[in-house]
Length: 153
Image (tube, rainbow, N blue to C red):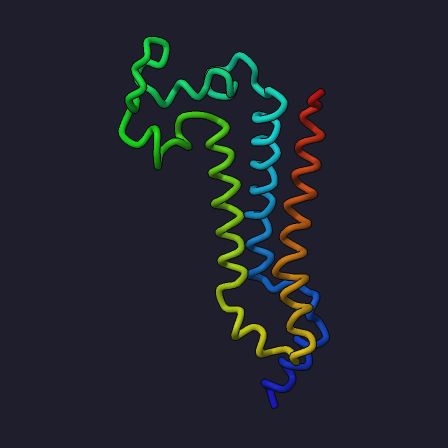
């Protein structure tokens, strides 16, 4: 009887995010923020003149002595798995990918159990809205807001 009541409540609110999903939405917002800064840095020369941010200067930070042709790694991993520590472009890319991926993984972690609460015809609505559309919408809206606030011409 209690399971039936929970099922009825779940069926009525297939569109309403769970507490766990609400907790992942800041990860998607962080992803959108990082993506906005990444795009501004890559395509609109954000941070021009700053050694860490300016893409015309920052790529040299991973090499020992780029100016004199020494292309060895500046420190262990600076050209491979720790490249995100060398400049802003790689840092924002890493934040974008890891926060988005973590949010998706958490959102889909117990999908089988969660979908059992809904009849078959509503399961795709749950996946389409709460698992895909809401996170993508949050990421896109945050991206737009942050990117526009940078006033890049």
